[in-house]
Length: 175
Image 1 (cartoon, rainbow, N blue to C red):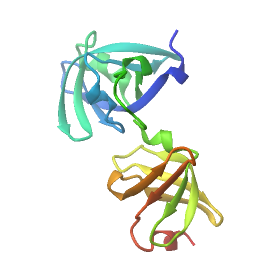
Image 2 (image 1 turned 45 degrees about the vertical axis):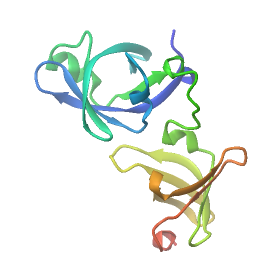
Image 3 (image 1 turned 30 degrees about the vertical axis):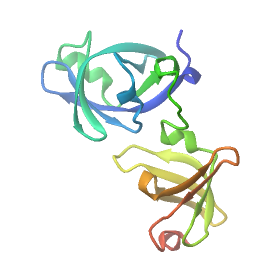
């Protein structure tokens, strides 16, 4: 039986595309691209079930249309609508140096903005849209900041610290 602790969330299935079983998928991780012949895992009826990715084609840098091996109709594909998509850790390349594959790996890190020197603890991730956000708990309450690779300037895994260059004034909106 597959356990959630063994999985890495890589995205979410959106809705069926067409009538032959293709499913639109939004990725929050680049791990999918690094795995050959991937099994995608979804939670169905309370258990994690693997499905072989039969074919896929990227429609953008973070989205793809995917056909699963046993899914060949729009009706069968509908059960995956809005389901989180996972990879098993065992599928990841062993020789690949990896620090993080998903934004969720940053939960528990302290985030500091280089411009304002304001900081907060990353307590959750908002990934229901294509613009992923860190949810920070600060001394003045909860705020949302963009989780964007191009804004990250430093990551210290041992100290669980992340430094970012955020848009000027972003903390001001919440105080």
